[in-house]
Length: 213
Image: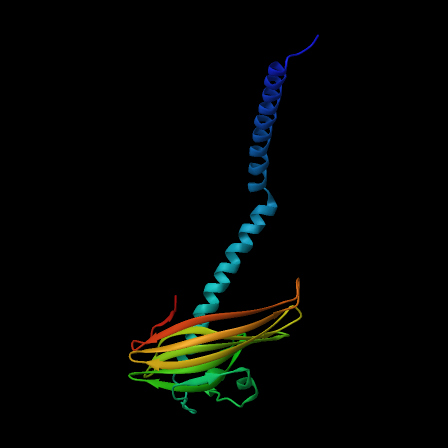
């Protein structure tokens, strides 16, 4: 018996609709099973642990920097100034108070300071204790012995998958200090490529360090 084309199309639509409905019904219990699985519970647990670790790390760093601003100021860096990867080769100041009272996963080297009335900006290299080079440049503002704010403005990193170096230029215009950070990233893995990323930061006279939009 011949089936007309209109009836054939209707049958195809009905069969297709049944497949979609069955697929939707089948996906719901799969999703629910995953949410109740041990794998998902372990994933959520790991997420929470990583978040707590990040918060604790920043709090530890804040305490560390609060002590650092009490250290003796050595090298004054006047505006305009430039900090390049060559700073890693130079001798930097250290502070006995940090060594005596803290046991952390990083070391610091004080590059210098800039005076921006009525506050000071400390330029600090923060070195993570890892197998590969992992160093960050911080701009830390303080007034007297009170830390006001800090921001990571540069990276110097080298490992098997990437090589990152940063050139930092700093200038003052009126009531603001402008920090321009240009990072060159040579990525080796998974795809070899080169990137140049520019970020800007602004420091006001209250010591607030903001990311420039």
